[in-house]
Amino acid sequence: MQKSTALLTDRYELTMVQAARASGLGSRHCVFETFSRQLPSGRRYGVVAGTGRLLEELQKFRFTENELTWLKDTKVVDSDTLDFLSNFKFTGNVWGYREGEAYFAYSPVIMVEAPFEQGVLLETLILSIMNYDSAVASAASRMRSAAGNRYLAEMGGRRTNEQAAVAAARAAYIAGFDATSNLEAGRSWGIPTMGTAAHAFTLLHNNEEDAFRAQVKTFGTGTTLLVDTYNTDEGVRKAIEIAGPKLGAVRIDSGDLGVEVARVRELLDSLGATETKITVTNDLDEFAIAALAAAPVDNYGVGTSVVTGSGVPTAGFVYKLVAHQDEADNWVSVSKRSTNKTNMGGRKQALRQIENGKATRELLAAGHEIAVRSNTRELQVPLISEGIVDESFIGSEAVSKARLVHDQAIRELPAQAHRLQRGDAALQTEFI
Image 1 (cartoon, rainbow, N blue to C red):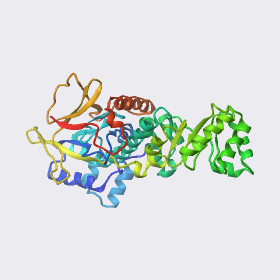
Image 2 (image 1 turned 45 degrees about the vertical axis):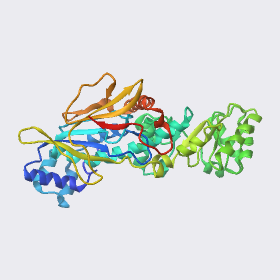
Image 3 (image 1 turned 135 degrees about the horizontal axis):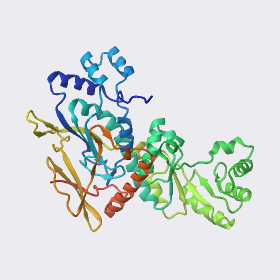
Image 4 (image 1 turned 60 degrees about the vertical axis):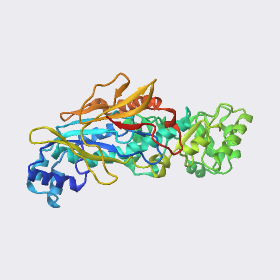
């Protein structure tokens, strides 16, 4: 039996349902939008990720006997609300940006149209998934730009919780990473996995030579040997002596990587191992990767900075009611007016303006629909129709499609989008 996701939410969402139903407005049709008022400071674009995971989790959003019993025992809501929740099934519509797409300030990346008593319950699940996954994908995309065509692997699972580790690997792969060290991410999402040995394997053996021999005997000469446990230069010499000049790669995980890589490349070439690649790890982020652009690095392994920490500022998504129907079934635009927390009311249609193959503006039509122009493309697609999830957005095949969406979206952005320095967003959002 699938585990319910219904309690992956905040208490006030259920209490709002109880109060709205008591006032007679629980069934009022509403539009909710997920957007960020601004990109994280200094970022030039964001990347949408998590959509497929969200749809999968929404399919499990049911209040089973276990959830209802706990809600009753802890007196979260009254008996009438428990009766409503016992039969809960989302019957509304959801649109969103394609997973892998770029987004900007006020981009309506997820839009929900449903009765208030249904749509409000989805807030925390939508935000918890979309905020984290999009933050990881946005950081990963910058790292992909900095790495160019070089191999880029995600290996940050030990720096976050076990569930976030899988989500982060998925998001990084969508944004262009080549592989992950996380096996569950490989199984769940079809992501290539990588990894051979850590320092513990070398330290297990009586000496470095024995460790290298054991690894080469087990995995062949195409393996990657970690050469910096004791002395990097000596480690390289022993690696080539044992594996021969056809050794697949050596890995460096310490020191001044720019200096270390140059010296190791020269040493490998002098030993005849001209095809042996160099993999670097050790707290890399997009700036460290960019600093190594001129160095003879072949492969990067990125951990902490792609899954957590300063490399992954939150996407800042919020979930706001922007329109509801009145007693005559006319749509009424609504919005919050608090200082620094304003937004444009009304359901939005999102378009991206394209000129000479490059994106120039994000266009949002609020409260009405406009014809898609010849120099624009529509950004929102149906994800759920009358409660039925579009299964094409779920699973490993959908992840591969999202990688293609991301590649197209990034190629479409103007040159300034790829600069790592702090700066304004690559596209300005215009309400029309």
